[in-house]
Image (cartoon, rainbow, N blue to C red; front, side, top):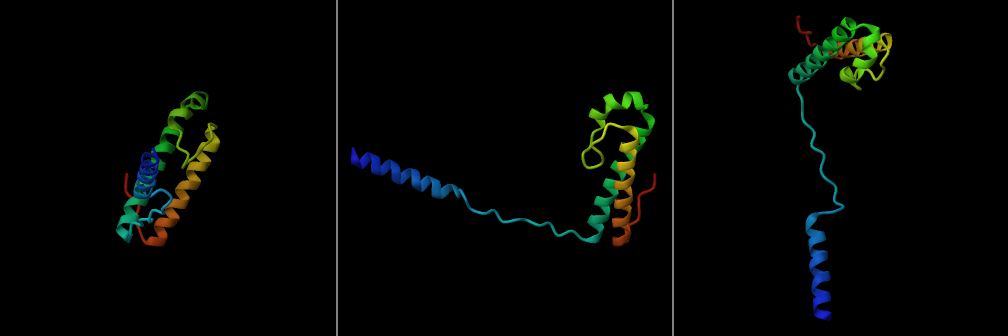
Length: 109
């Protein structure tokens, strides 16, 4: 009986050691060059512009219901039309400033 208990404890401890529980996972950082950053900023800008267009086309009455479908926490968390547009325009200005620092050109509609 002692052999079975000792064997099971040893095998369980070996399994725990082999799984790597508690070990730090190395952080993988993608090295992005300027062109990759410009593409990423253009994608963000395109997303924000689409969001602004959708909000502007929707009436304020229907926007409270549609805010759930349009909700993008990176742009705005509000369901008020004025606040949504204000937040989206702030986000757009921030993206354009970042593009300017990297020398990126905005896409054309």
